[in-house]
Length: 237
View 1 (cartoon, rainbow, N blue to C red):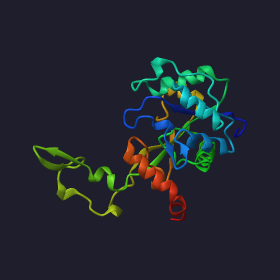
View 2: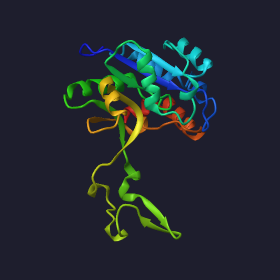
View 3: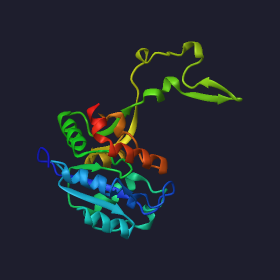
């Protein structure tokens, strides 16, 4: 609880994964992938309950072993790869006791820590205009200024008319960010009104580059595992 507001962490974990089969139960640096967001949420100073929404009985059992609640198995219509995030969230809201703030943590972003969750919640509560806060990271070399398109086999600038207008030095361009998936937090009323975490009243929670990696395939998995094993080096920098 924070400022008398009840906070629930919701962690989605489908049994099916096309990019990396069995992803959510696959062992990452000694723990199943699903365990990482559960433990981060349990270590938070503000989260009151940690709930996993899944269609997989195996995932449910592992989630319970690590301390999460699994009050139901997700229905089939919310368990395929076409299911919308907001529908999964609304299903959960309808099946949980009343709460004020939802923290949505995806297992594919296992580098998110309790400290990130708590700082983001504090920032959200400090801003009277904001209704949600989401994780973002700096675009860096993927800045839109450097984006390209292919026209008839030749590269052309994506956002400007000519390469002569290209700003080579990063110091010349405005900062650019991307949604990194590290965390999503919203007042429940805003989720019901806007149907998403992104809208005109959304704040950024700026995460360091090393926390921005998401796991979609085996390459990502190995990269994140290496980061976890060398986490103190990254924190030191």
